[in-house]
Picture 1 (tube, rainbow, N blue to C red):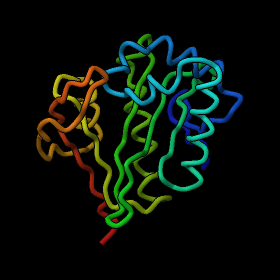
Picture 2: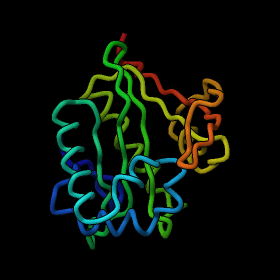
Picture 3: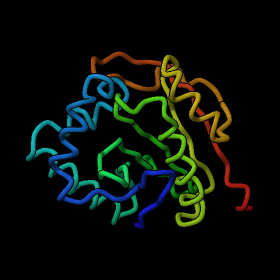
Length: 182
């Protein structure tokens, strides 16, 4: 998996040397990601669990079941967030996109820039037919990112996601079709 560049940031695969900085990123954002990315929030608790998390992400990448990109600022190598390609269905060549940005960098267009790099990589390198985003109805920022990047709202999936506290919530489903595949 190669490194993708956009603006003053890059997207790159995780490696074991990222453990300390990834733990700090998750700790700094744990409360805000707990609702929408509970698996990540629960998997990254200390240095041992973050190493295990990274090893799993590397194995998943090799098995083509998930790709996890680190968003990193080029100038100072500061970790800005994570971007996931997950929930692959290779029978129809589609996957879900998930992401989070550090709370101190929110609203600066970083996730939209990352999305603009991920979309052509996913369609070109992985030969995917469709990308989709499932966003909680109240997550207005994520919903705006989907629309800004050409995704179309396809509907609301009722009681389709369980938050960390066990609440089932509705999610808005957005899809983007690769029009270069027939």
